[in-house]
Length: 236
Length: 392
Image (cartoon, rainbow over all chains, first blue to last red; front, side):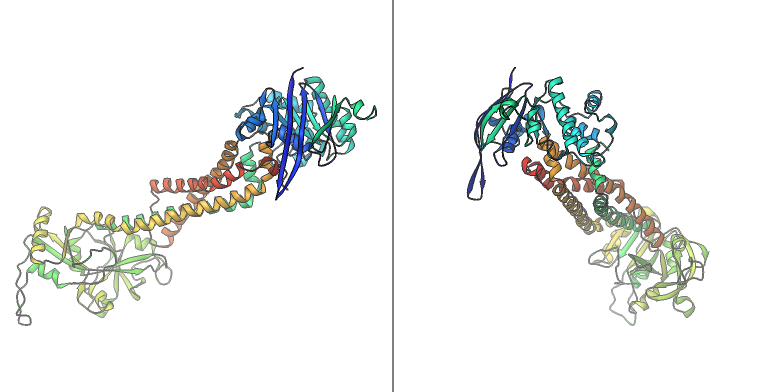
């Protein structure tokens, strides 16, 4: 397997007034292509900051982030945006769909940003929506969908452009158990059937247990990395 | 609705409508004011074309073709035609010969009064009817001409042109006919005749009456001089300048050009109106788009998370502003057309909606909108993606 993501001694310090707050203190990590990685840790341990840096939304104070051979930290803001467009798909806890657009409209917008064209691959779009069980919801706006359906649309939007990595920030945090289960199944299906690399932040041990590997963060460091069975002592 | 721009516009219909109306106001301001200024000037110039007299004799000083008070002694009309000789009352009078080649002269008083309809203004001619019809193509189509105004039965009579009769209302609000009462110079006049074609002012009263109402002096605004042959006009002008220095003598066919010169201050006014229209468009769109991007901060964060470039975000906001502005331009044109129809139906103002002013108004509307959206668009493009996507 190829290394799709590598972070080396990643540090991030926020300046809050006159106080410096260290969110990451040297996080080093490798993720292989097709891997499904869950990141766990207490609140404030730096998980979200790590995800935002890896997604090119934040520039770290020091260290390197290399995605498929491209060093994100050596890039300008515009270059990071371009890399995000080409290689990253985000899934957020709050779904973050455009409320004025239909499910299909949200996907079309992502496609247009990716390709710069209005004429898209409708067959692929319909295929993705079908895969995620949304073929009859294409023309519904987010407010006409359940939370689980909205998150599935968000996942569809994240995968529509075949990104190298999907970064999911607590994707089941706003869902009930039933919908969480559906969403996690779909993410697992994307990983197993299509080899989609996924990095998921979660507080939910059951969600983490579905990953290939669980990374534990604490105080801005990666403190443990291993199979779910190791992370939970053989008990999810 | 899959288009982000169309969806954004329809998401806040009231704000969109207010923005469209704001841009439309700027467009109406430009098209209607420009149309009004052009229409009135063009109409006045056109009405000069029915004058047969080749030469116009005016008092010295600044030449103004609108609203000149009675400054020129009316006896110049007689002097030009018959010459001047010393009299027993004025033995020192310098003798002057009749101007060779002149066949007729007519003194005309011209006064600008507020429109009876309450909007704009209208001109009134005071004329010596007998000589006036020899120097113009005026022809009665109904009723009779004017008397000299020196008797009570002729003093408060007026004649009007066909346009006035067709579009005007008498004091009782009825269409203007022979015998209708109308207000001229603050007094009640009876319509004695209707004439065509339009020549000079649309309403004409006896010069003597105008002189009495404006102070009693036996003055006029200008004297129309008709030559025996049109080709004699240059020589007549030359002689008039020689014998009556200090006065203005101009060829009637130069008057449209003088009207154009008279448009110079109007051009300044129009430029101010254009500037106002532009400022209105810019401010309306700036405020609308600024509040829009604050409301949509989170959505801009989503766009950034999807990898939208600054250019993409700026173009999205600019396209939205341009679309709103374009709708404002269309509404503005409709408003200007309605305004034109209303003004022409209810007043005697003329509005020319010239293509070049329509194009200019459209450019002002759309460019104003696009310029107004620049700052909000740049601000949106520069938002921090993490802060934007966390915005509540």
